[in-house]
Image (cartoon, rainbow over all chains, first blue to last red):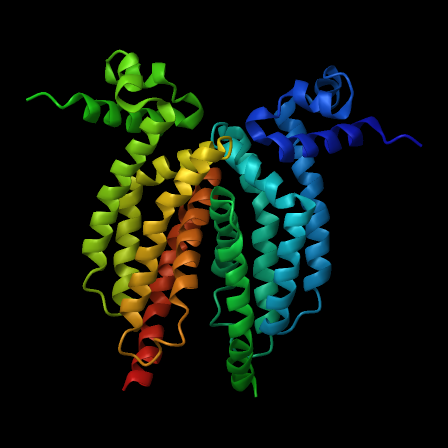
Length: 197
Length: 197
């Protein structure tokens, strides 16, 4: 069975965005990559920005499902650091990081796209907050740890880390930060457990 | 005495960038804002990107000087949190944050601009690292604290925090993070001193 038209358009949009960046991702460029008539973009999505947001939603919902599954059973900072590093490498491989970076950059020129992007960050902030909550649950630190602020900080750090890596063309400092988290995680677990015990 | 021509062009470029964003900042737009002939941009700077980098350098060197002065005598996390919040508000007021955000966004479409931006982040990463070093000096924690990674993480967090705030048009979560730092700073100082004492 042929891939439904809307799905084909979304796939072509994701490919175009990661290949030529936001500035080059016109209706014409997407249509050329996907071998279809560019009028289909307007017919099915209303416009290029709407299509790009639909493409982000697809990439994001796939990654969110994967994150939720991988983070669901974590109860220690040590496991969290390990899983986060793996999820980060997957984000790079699947191209999800590139899609987010391009749309964040593009959004600076289009306020309505910025608002739409901001809404789409919320599930990630919530997921970060919920994960922190899960790790501190039962340790006696629940009331002390500002999980809402930490959820925001973790999302912002991830985004900023990728912005610097993208500018520089160098992911070594980002990977070094994951190594650091892994080194300090056992100490954090010890402190959390000591209070609980 | 009239402002020298190069300075007038830089000032007009900064104003254009903060008013209409990277995408709208053409030679023509800058020349219109500064009331001069757009050929002067090419004569003095060689091109718009070169001018924008010169404008960023001016804004950045002013802010770096201010940061260095404000952070020079700090020896506690409590003072650091207080001063950082004030510097953040100044970054917003002076428009420096907006200039950085616009150029980071623009750089995603121009790899050579990305490289130039990455170089310009280094003094900020170094300043963050040096400040962390200064705060932990003499506490007995010097060998334990990974100042290089923290310098990178602080710069990335600041950048990402501003990206989210910019998308959302809401700086409340960023300010809440500074409040959080102020709340936890005395505890951090207590832990650092206890080891030193």
